[in-house]
Image (cartoon, rainbow, N blue to C red):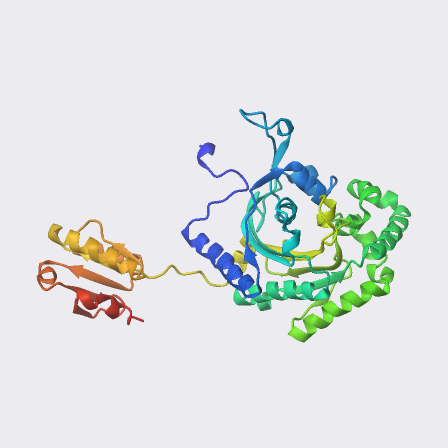
Length: 423
């Protein structure tokens, strides 16, 4: 029955997949902490206005992909919330910015945060892209200097390196300049595309009046031909913007972080400025971006907060997990195997003591000795502890090394020390 299947665009993280997922998140969390990023979490849903303000009323995410619901007027709801709508978060930068404003965090800058969690977009499910997916990300708020851009990029690069993906990705960089440079470039784009308006796709004709930079992201074949001849952002940068980008590049050079300049890499919304970057790969087909970010100095002001600079990135956990070359093995447990009812109580107590000592322990629940040992081998146990009448009488256990087949009688008071010497 369809009701017993996962909803389209969602998937179960079964143990093997969950280990890969956790490898990505845990490794990222540890590296981010080395850079001074502190973990935070925002609600899974926000008032819809949070995303409309930050993503733009005309963006595909807002117009086509958000899961939005009427909040309703349940018992005790505030008057101003009765007719509001809420939206499952499609990304997390907006939530962090909202928390910065509503939490009164302006006095705590520079604010450096790391986050991890599920996001939701109603789009066509495909490889590496689901309707419920997971992201990790960092945001550095309150630092206007290029050093912040360098540090954020360096953090992302180190995470990818720790995951063994350094050779699988390419860092692509561009500059969007300051607001004056952006305005000049926007004017040039409008002039260029207006001269070819009949050849633009319907979506791009609409973007021409609202947000012409987004035409550069169009996937339409005809649009792509026009984009190839469009003006370049670099030709409209003022000296301040050029100097800012030069400092970012110098910082990356000093750290030995390789990059490729991509003059077509843009961000459509006006609050983005200066550095835009993506780590891309050719190993996931069309879904090439695995980590993307940039500077958004105008975002918090757009949301009604004080003028506050910011820079950050987000990365899809599913995509990174797909790139991990090796399966992530589960910890090899110690199998505790009682032989006969008399040994059950002792086996249970020993298992509990070993867990408190930090060992992964699986207790054999039923079956004869042969079946319990077969189960221990199936779960890839490192060793088995056998408890029979002889072991109970000697206050000991028979430790069987399941790799070598060797076994020995070990007193219970030295069992933890003996197990710690297993390779």
